[in-house]
Amino acid sequence: MKKILLINPFGIGDVLFTTPVIRVIKESYPECFLGYWCNERVEPILKNNPFINKTFALSRGDLKKIFKRSKIEGIKEALIFFSEIKKQNFDIAVDFSLDHRYSLVCKIAGIKKRIGLNYKKKVKFLTEGIDVEGFENKHVVEYYLEVLKFLKTKPPQSIKLDVFLDKKSLAWVDAFLKEYNLKGVKPLIGIAPCGGASWGKQAYLKYWPLQNYIELTKKLLNRYNTKIILFADEKEKEIVNFIEKEINKEVINLAGRLSLMQYLSLLSKLNILITNDSGNVHMANALGIKTVSIFGPVDEKVYGPYPLGQNNIVIKKDLPCRPCYKKFRFLGCQYDLRCLKSIKVQEVYSAVEGLLS
Image (cartoon, rainbow, N blue to C red; front, side, top):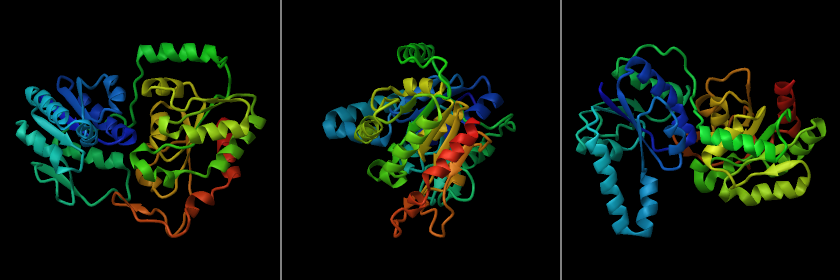
């Protein structure tokens, strides 16, 4: 148990779902060297985790982008990365990738014990694994924790998602709050009307209607003497710009303007975040921030806030066709996303008011 490598190449939410595993391993084996293989986008979150000794950031998706620019550069980056993994001489790999290529790299790198989730029995290079066809009926965190039986860890003292902020980001957020006269403003409300980068071009399938967000924002501004911060990434700027234009008053549009760590540090200062089903809800939850999250095609019991507490309200509709995202596949919608469109502004507004009361 000297050196352990965790592997999760997915998005922010998925990586945060592994943080209880990280904590349990370190509580059980405090002297072990813990590495984490992730994608480049999420690496900043892990770099600040005191339980992780070293991060390795290069996913298949990252490598594909490099190969599009230059095959020679892609081969070079892959070889350098493999060399970095190999020279660490890891004893164990814990693979959550669901992809046999990651465990194959580990085998070639000489990692003798390779455990993880064996998706459809296709992850051929694991030495021990838990067979899964998909994630159903229980939360992803609980699937991930099952793998710990192969490590003979101690029972966890507590199960929660972890996010750690750095001094630089905390200093930045203090300056930001002063610049925008937000010091002492309560309630400080954040809205993330997009989200879901891991769904790529299909992310819109998880969006609550834009007009509803506009109406909700207006109602909250009329109810509370506050400012509302709008969050989105660079690719979603047009959507948030439209909301800002329609409201034309106390909103702060930060679409595409924040690094991941700046976003997290500002998130930590909110009183509440309203968001679609996305990594936003998990980041806020890990920071202990109240959330109202809106779920459509995806099962909140599997991918929702964890652990679900009194500070988290999930808004969803229990329809016969829902969830339609199963076994890592969106099955298609014949009902014009009624699971999202039937959620009324008043439902979300009442949930926010209840958490802020």
